[in-house]
Amino acid sequence: MSTQQQQMQNSGGGGGGSGSMGIPASEVFWTLADKADKKFSKIRDIPFYQRSRHDTYFYKVFKVYTQLWKFQQENRQKLVEAGLRRWEIGEIASRIGQLYFGQYMQTSDANYLSESYIFYEAILTREYFKEGMFQDVNIANKQLRFLARFIMVCLVLNRREMVQQLVNQLKVLVDECKRAFQESDFKEWKLVVQEIVRFLKADTAFMNLRPLRYSLVLDPHPDTLPHVPAAITKRHLKLRDAVLSSFHQNEVKYSELTMDTFRMLQCLEWEPSGLFYQSSGSKLGQNGATGTSRISYIQDIADPTLPANPRKAVLYRPALTHFIAVLATICEELPSDGILLVYLSASGYCSSPQNESGCIHLGCHGERGSNCIYPSDFLPFTRRPLLLVIDNDNSNAFKVIADAEKGETVAMLLSPSCSPAVSDCSHHPNGSLFTMFLTAPLQAFCLLIGLSDTDIDVDTFNKAETILTTSLNTWGLALAISDTLNPVWGQVLGDPFIRRLILRFMFCHEVLTLYAPVYKENKFLPTCVPALPMPAMPPTYSYESVILNIASMFGATKHFIFSEDVYQPEKLEVDMNELTL
Image (cartoon, rainbow, N blue to C red; front, side, top):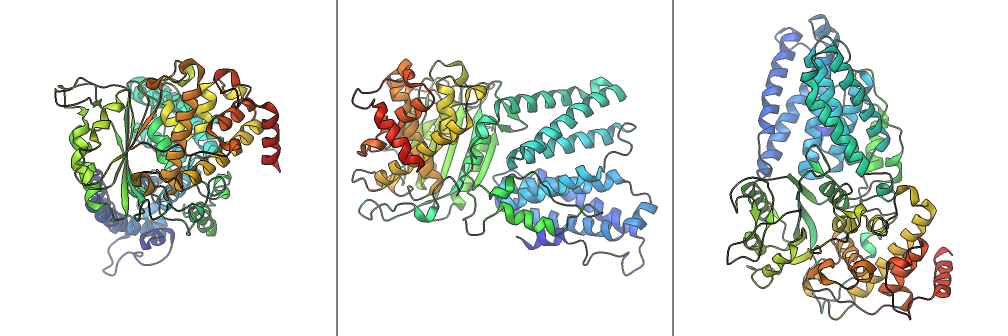
């Protein structure tokens, strides 16, 4: 934990008092508050691609808010007598929560996310904005903004019970504000409520039966992953950075986090310990600070033995120039042992100039090319290791990058050109099927065969999850020792996040290959560049056998076309018994 975070936790220390020159406490406070407000406004204007500048300035802003927060704690009575109101204390805590969450989005450091939660929870518990809320529209809006931001933090933390509690509060407060003030002033808040309700309707409990983050309880520990022989590659890269972006008309989102980027963000992070999911929160001191439970709470959500989360840039409908600037900055700062993952999810593509194979449309306005990303746009960045995950009907257009690189061979996972005609699997409301296979493969499988939340038996799902996890690990071992494995994949197979994406990609490919409505139609199959080998497997873990086993558990074998020598129900029963021993 940083020194600044430790300072913010302490309720005592320097910075208190009324000053050595006898300056009134209220004057010192408002001077500090004005200074903090100006710095806070500046940090919001720093573009993401200026990451080093943002990091430097964050600590400057943080330092001022540390002083301001401690000063109001140590001089609370004097300040209240001088006219300090509770909502003004809440505003400081809310700013600190915003700073922490913003820094989490910049760094992917889970400690910042937990600190943001703690300050927002303090505001909720202490009801800083309650007094005068229905007499002053500005205070009402502060409470609404606080609730909306706290919902975002809880969503990313996967604290679902708190999310539901906050959404209910938001609904009630918007209705009460419409009665207390002019209804027209709260039309935008009604849209916010509709947005989060729609988001939660898509991100159901079924989608969260298994954590999307990399879990050491469910996924293999990085130290146990098989090594790729030196004959294949002597270089081993780690996922250090990722750029996540999506553009779909009327897509499910909350604020600037779409359903697809929300899932990918979690998929590229470590899952905290089991205690993280307990509903018990931190205990708050009388001034909104926390006691010893705060330290244990942070320890619960972070494992110091794990590497840092890959740093991620989540870009919501970026301008092309901004997107390119972010890529350039990240490539410039990428460590020598790092690889950059770029994830693009979009529903449209536009016509291309004669010398281009196609492109992805990231906007709905502007002249041709101003909102389009072409394969050639990535070529300058192929001087560094790059993994492209393209989820778009025109994803195959990006195959032309191969053999045109400027230094490093690009690895690509490309979505199918067409999606199966299953209503539950359209991009709305559940998000992209391809992205779902990469982030929640068993849920994607269930949705493909038409199973909904109410159709799923949790015990059956968990047994199927065990089969899938065991099978994917077996596939991963076979892939690592394959003589035909391309070095481009060999150098990243030791990274737990990329390895998991690769294996889930293989599962997606095999499921769609056998899926009866689109049986062996190439346009419905995802592709990867360079091609992945399909090493021979023991009969129990052959690709068809695994899919057969899972389909049988859900009574869904009719949805697939299997080879005659694979369909052996008696063998399935033996395999299941072996698994449960």
